[in-house]
Amino acid sequence: MQKEAENSSQLNEQLVQEAFGELPNVIEELHVAIEELHQQNEELVEARIAIERERQRYQELFDFAPDPYLVTTIQGRIVEANYSAEKLFNVRRKNLCGKPLSIFIDREGHHDFYLKLVKLKSSPSEADAGNRQVVLQDWETIIKPRNQSSFPATISVSSIYDSQKQLLGWRWLIRDITQRKQAEATNRMLQEAREVNSLKSRILRTVSHEFRTPMNVIYISIQLLERYSNIQNESTNKLFLKMRKAIDHMVNLLEDIMTFSQAEAGKLECNPSMIEVVPFCQNLIDEMSLDNSTKKIVLVEKNQLATGYWDAKLLRQILGNLLSNALKYSPLHSEIILELERQGDRALFHIQDCGIGIPPEDGDRLFEVFYRAGNVGTIPGTGLGLSIVQKAIELQGGAIAFSSEVGVGTTFSVSLPLRSR
Image 1 (tube, rainbow, N blue to C red):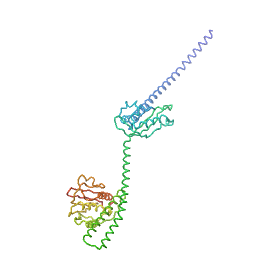
Image 2: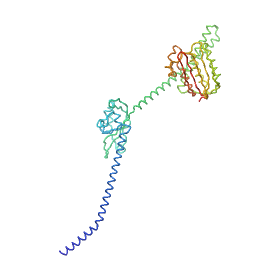
Image 3: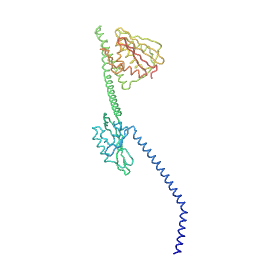
Image 4: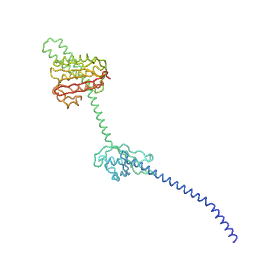
């Protein structure tokens, strides 16, 4: 027993010595483990801070997004809302939470809203949970904010799932589409107006074309009657003259209608050619003077204006209508002045009369189609002439202006580039 005790004592002493020998290694390993744990803890703290920053960033994106965003339960009760939603519904965010979204749907849209909600709850798909897709997009409804008027809006909805792909609720994106609806309504009105204008132009072209043939027949018949009539006296000659004037008036009116319809349809052509200005204007004055013996048109050349590159037909429409109006609205035995002037690379045509003038309140609408000044009285006219003049001038890159005084007279000034585009 003594021997065994001695052996045991030697063994314990050996184990103790071995244990003390391993102790530094164990302590070193413990220090390493503690260091690793400390490092891992720091990494976890940094990761937590980064996650919190990211969460804060997304929260700010949510809160301050320009479009209204909501988060609701699957029953449609609001649990989160951003500032745009607060503004949209006219309710503070803290007061929005807990309220059902349906109270902000206009009464007429309630039934459709509940049907959509039931459909959303009854048909969630795993694809939505995996891809976070929008399950309902651009659904149009009417939103009724608190104490404000209703307005049209589109709603897009996406599903919210937990880690087990269980449906938790929905995210809602709502957009006010009032301006879009107004733009659509305006576009519809413009389209309808274009269709009406197109129909009007077709009717005008058809009427003008159909009237032209019988007018020509009547005109030729009058010429034949004048030539072969056995009764030649002052009375019949006056009657034939009145008939010719009436036919000429109708032909000019039809010409105006045709030109106007072409301009409205964007089919008024401009075919410029070289024009000798003074002979052109003098020929036009001579033609118009034949039927206006009681009024005189005077051509005045202010400076050298020899030629211009314009469409002769359009220039005739411009000057012819303006001179015709000057003759129409001027008193008997009065004088109308057509003044020609050159300024740089532009030609100016001034048509001055001493007629009834244009009231100031009519000035802004003078070039509108079918509009006539309020002081024309019983003087005949269609209100097409100045509209045609303006379109013919603009087509050649020109401009028109006027000055007028009631009871004194009016001056129209036409500016055209010497080489029309």
